[in-house]
Structures are given as C-alpha cells and as structure tokens.
Image (cartoon, rainbow, N blue to C red; front, side):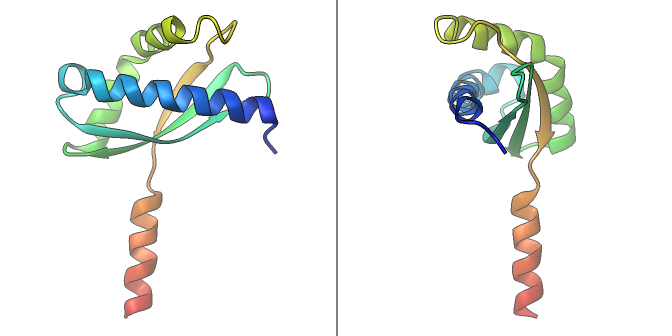
Length: 111
C-alpha cells in the first residue's frame, strides 16, 4: 500500500513528466503522442515505475527511444522539482496496455 508521501511524489512526477513529453515529443521521440498514465514510486523513493500510453508510432520503438533518453528526462525533472525533493528517483518506463485490455474485454462481452 502506498503511503501519502509516495502518492504526492508520484503525482508531482506524473505532472512534470507529462509536461516534458508534451514539450519534447516532436524533437526527441519522433512526434509520437506520449501520455503518462500512472507513476508508482517505491517506498524508499529511489525508483519510479512510469507507465506510458503511446499513440502515433510503433510503441516498442518509441519506448526504446524514451529509455535511451531517461538520463536527460531525469535531469529535466530534477531541475523542475529541485525545491520539492532532495533526490529524484530513477525511472523505469513501461507501456501501459490497460486500454487494450479494456477493449478486449468489451469486445468479448459484445460477442
């Protein structure tokens, strides 16, 4: 179960990551539309699992681009939250496939 602090930090990271993906998507990620759907922070605040929804390009190749830019993304986040957090967690990026799962369930129910 996540603590209140973990939820607050996850929310801050989600908002800042979303703004970075919105601003830098055209340059860094080939114009793919990337949405941050969920962020989970470990209890020691050293790692953050970031779930992304990727539209427009091949999701796997775009995820590899995001992972290759993770140090630059972490540095940008550190510049934004330097007055709120002492240490910025390391990011682990994953594709959020929950939308595909919901569509599959909906399709099965309609049959």
